[in-house]
Image (cartoon, rainbow, N blue to C red):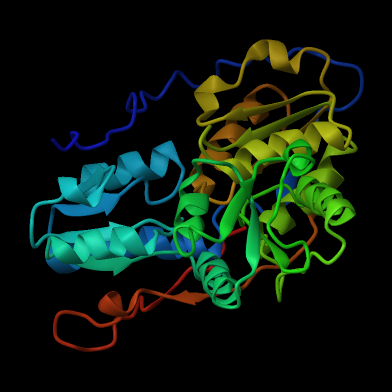
Length: 353
């Protein structure tokens, strides 16, 4: 029996603004605003894909898993007619289904086809690149050490490309326990949203055990994940408190909290919404760092900045460490309108911060 459609825990109920009090501290209050932050090209592309599918085909459009790992984004798409499910067997035969930005395994693609579903693949192209690497190395009979979090949708999708050749490595400590068939034919790949530093430490430990370990042909950790981590490192050095806007199931958002603490922030917290920022976090705080994960719309950051301004943090300094202008084309099914003309939104995925 199939399980019911997936819905997010509790829809957002906007809290009262002006909750935070302007309590004097030693020195001038200010905000260090990290840039880049928020939406990456792959997330923007995936969200637009669901919106355009709803415009093109009408509601409902089904989405396997959360299109991106952000409560606000998924809730807003639900309001427009998207229905989120865990697996394709919950989707009525013949319906449109969108695969999330995190990617799916060939088994999921096959299951959708068997049910006669009209699939739209919104997998981030950078994730697709890792899938292709897995297929290539498996074809050459390499053992693939996939650095990532067991159970994460992206890891499941990548491992599903070559299940007999992939071993998931969860952490640097786990690297010390891994066994391989042939140490001369081993390569590492990684989940795209990991901490750069932790991934490199995992690779270091693997290479100590397997000196002939090969690297992927290009960096697997996505540009947006790296850029956001570099920016928060610079912010964290001068911050008494860092607030990361992002959801608990967003790997890159959770990593930003960890990176901020590692690089000097005295405290760091993750919030989905401004309502979750607590007064006690601001006690004695002169400088607040603010950033957001790669699946977070800028409006949620703006709300945090507005609330902080009411608490006296009106001086906002942007700390920019990179420019982003990458654009990904939409899935092929959505590049033309209903009349067969090229759609004006055929290109999607420009980062906004």
